Image (cartoon, rainbow, N blue to C red):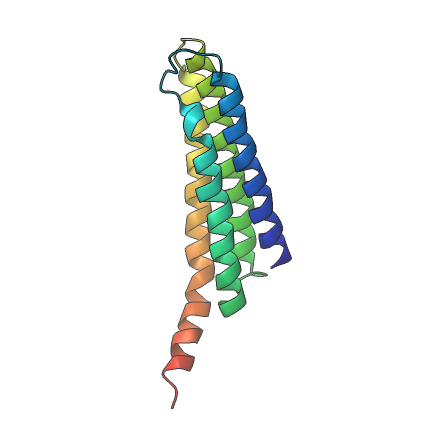
Length: 141
């Protein structure tokens, strides 16, 4: 549970820093183009901080941490969030310069999304047994 709290706090800090970074990068621009840089902070806050806080509550109720599938989830999901956010920063900076993202940007973004998908599948696997146990306890007389 402590690790989930630390992850949530880290993502909160990263999300706030990403918002500040975007503001500093666009402060002196008369017209700010639409870039992926503008949404990095919301991705970090929603996919990072909020998901970890929800999992913290689920862990308190269902004891989901400590299983192999939850460990796989933690590593792959967090790698996916960080990869995706990093590529968004990279692509956003290219867009601020007036450029377009190339195949490398799309390919690495795809890897980030694949990691997120593997992580989410692992999360559902790790939730299945605790949810079944909780349902059985709820239906006992």
